[in-house]
Image (cartoon, rainbow, N blue to C red; front, side, top):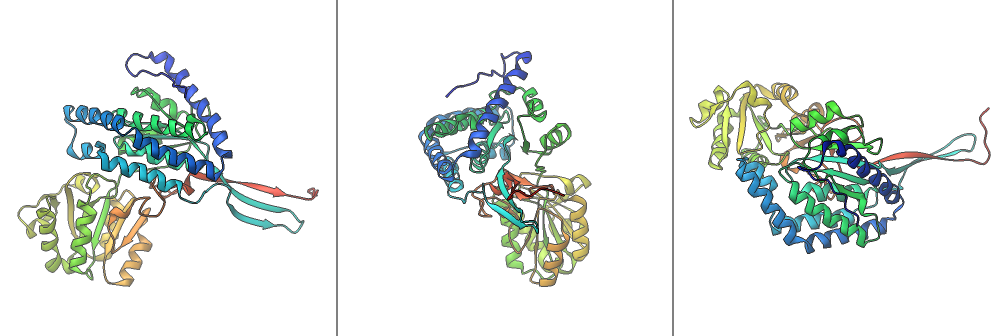
Amino acid sequence: MTVLSLRSDAAGTAALPEQMAEIGRRARRAARLMALASAQAKDVALRRIADRIRADKAAILEANERDVALAQQAGQSAALIDRLRLDPKRLEGIAEAVETVGALADPVGRQLAAIERPNGLLIERISVPLGVIGVIFESRPNVTADAGALCLKAGNAAILRAGSDSFGSAQAIAQAMSRGLEEAGLPADAIQIVPTRDRAAVGLMLAGLDGCVDVIVPRGGRGLVERVQAEAKVPVFAHLDGINHVYIDRAADLAMARTVLLNSKMRRVSVCGAAETLLVDRACAETHLRPLVEALLESGCAVRGDAAVRAADPRVTAATEADWGTEYLDAVISAKVVDGLDAAIAHIETYSSGHTDAIITEDAQAAQRFLSEVDSAIVAHNASTQFADGGEFGFGAEIGIATGRMHARGPVGVEQLTTFKYRVHGTGQTRP
């Protein structure tokens, strides 16, 4: 395998554009070969990648230990360090996720539609790979494998750019993936990771690397996503932060509400599917509000609430306007009492990031209104917001949760990493 050298501290800025352009050219060549690879060849490669991740466990975990130590020295939050940290169990989960992607149905070459015209022409719409996908992500090293595996399964090549926090871990995982590809007889350059921390490399990817990048996928906080959307010269799958709501309707079962709320918030506070705001219908506040707030506080979650929520428990601190639009990614939740379903929907329309929002209710009509009127990528009824995950949707893994409205929305799996083209079959027809 040829390794392109790019040193983050010593490499000259003047050399960076050409070095990045070479990464793009290699990715384009690899993408052409991946588009022609059989389903069997891709599946074998993904199994080899999973095996290589396991075989390189010691090196990957050692690199991760260095990343975690640097993050701790830099005073990063406990939530960020949790997203960053790998252990043998999490690494095995990464390998298993790659195998799961390999076991999915091949999304390439499917006939999406067939049209027979009166003149005898047969027109097919066929799924094809997107091409070269640039993935820019921050602190989660598992994104390296998830994104890479999904891109490969869909017949694409991937250029991955990890954040500074996960830099070493991501490099080690990507190297294992490239070796797995090579062992399976597919181009190692179908997975490339930008080997520099220089932020100028991100700008070059957003410019398209001389036409070699077909789409950009940002995976990270609002700052990263806003920069990508502002600067990208190629299409972007929008992945905004997860300002997710759980609304407790007047017809909610209290036991279910408590269970779903705690899971939505506290299962893992650092994931984008975690609930960040609790809304409680005033009609059930007398019976439901105090037990729910107590459950959150006793689980270790700080609660910031409006006057009604503060009156329910003196441990609640005052919520500010900024809290309603904050993705905490920590054991903190904002809470508010609202005047029914209309007020809940209005609050969500104002503050939601369009990621995932849930209603807890036994009223089928209220549930249907919520599911129809809340315009988020994922809406749930009587289920945790933390089901916002490609694996839980049966996609094997995800490259992220798209909150935009174009092409892909919700968990982005292998099918969303394809596009289509038309094949026209004739018998000598000409247009009059």
